[in-house]
Image (cartoon, rainbow, N blue to C red; front, top):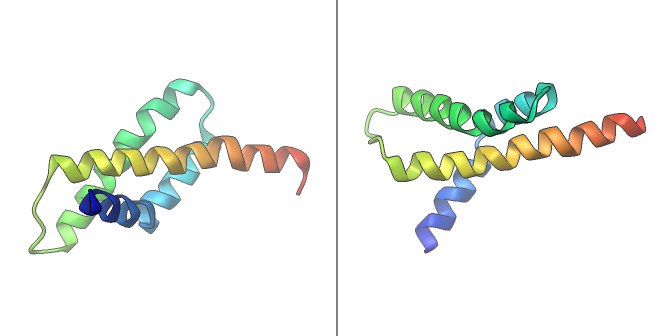
Length: 89
């Protein structure tokens, strides 16, 4: 259980998935894009991390946790940032 939380926090604090999630959530027009976005963002971040780290192994478990973390960023980008921009803050 502890390793799941550690991997989730590491993926949640990853700047790659964070920036991509905020960007995609901000510019998403339809709700179907919000469903597809975490899978694409997790795949892109795993490919980037796998290509830059020599000793890293690909794991489906880590990819699925990355999907959960990316969905948090997409939701923040879509619902949170759009609400703030509509208020004019």
